[in-house]
Each structure stands twice: as structure tokens, then as C-alpha cells.
Amino acid sequence: MRIWHMLVLIFVLACVFGVARSEVGRVSIVMFFTGLGEFILGATALMHLFKTIGAFGHAKTLHAHLEALLATALVLLAATVSMNLVFWAGASLLKEMLSG
Image (cartoon, rainbow, N blue to C red; front, side, top):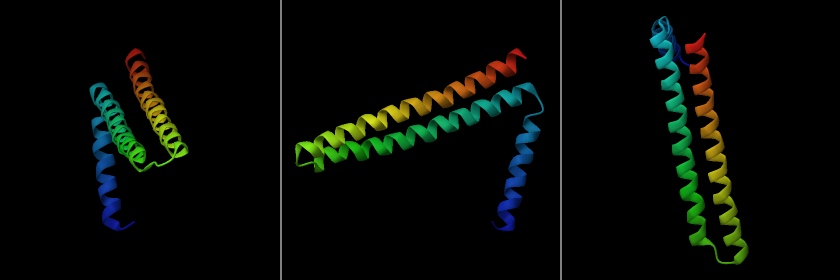
């Protein structure tokens, strides 16, 4: 890590800590990072889904078709579970913040 990377990291952390002083700032930080996590997981799942659906076009045997189908189902399941987990974590954090 170069020194300017560390300076940028310190600047970003200082901005986050400054925003987190108020309740509205804390809520916005949780919402931002929850949304960022959802976006990253959704984009990653979509890229993997295109890859697994593309495997259907390359499949020549029944075994290859079943393998592509299983990979597509696995990507859909993993994406759904991980995105729901991130959403649940953000919602429960907000619930605890606003009730307590």
C-alpha cells in the first residue's frame, strides 16, 4: 500500500465518522453500504448467470446440458440467499438503531 492510498483511506474514514455523529448520518451510512452490497452481489450474480446460461449454447451432450442447468440453479440460489442475507443484516441494523 502506498502512502497516498493510506491518506485516501484516512480521509474517507474521517468523512464517514463525521457523518456518523448524527442519527440521520448513521442511517444513511447503513443504507448506503447495504445498497452497495446489494448492487455488488446483484451485478456479480448477473455476470455469473450469463456465464452459466452461455454454457447451454456450448453443451453438446445431455450431461453437459444437465451440468449447465445445475450451475444456473446454483447461481440463482446463491445469489438469492446472499442478497437476502445482506438485506436482512441492513434491516436488522436499522431496526436496532432506530428502536434503541
